[in-house]
Amino acid sequence: MAKKILFLLFVILTFFGFNTHFLFSDEGETYYIFVMEGCPHCAKVESFINTSGINKKFNIKILDITKSSSNAELFRTMCNERAAECGGVPTLIYKDKVISGDTPIIEYFQSLGYKGIDWNKWIVIGLVGGAGFFIVGIIVLSIIKK
Image (cartoon, rainbow, N blue to C red; front, top):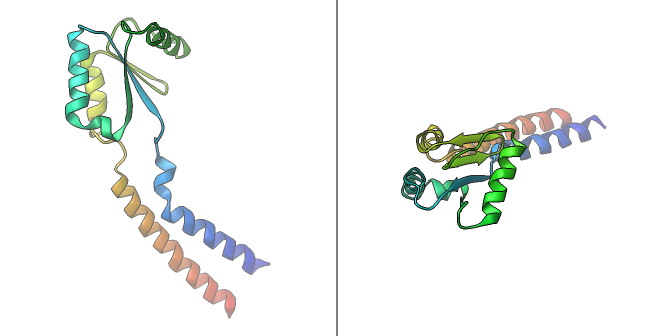
């Protein structure tokens, strides 16, 4: 019975060792940026997003509140859900964060290094961790077989 438990533990640890990057994923999370046509601050944020390549790393939706009543309603609803005052645009809403103004939004994305999670780093960590668990598992299995 102990052998089965150790083997199962080995398999689980090896799997998580190889796949640790999934534990830190923001995949599927959406960054909502509410803008308004003719707003120079909104244009600055949109330009930053398009030229920095950040829109390739994150799921960013830019929604113009003047072109669609549903966008305006979503803006009000999301602000109310977070008990935040969203008086102007541009405004970034992500999870529980509400950030207004061009400079604060740009600085927020810059603080993420334009790329958020460095997948290459997490894949290497996962592979090294997985290899470590694999080696430990082989040692454990060799001890069990004795």
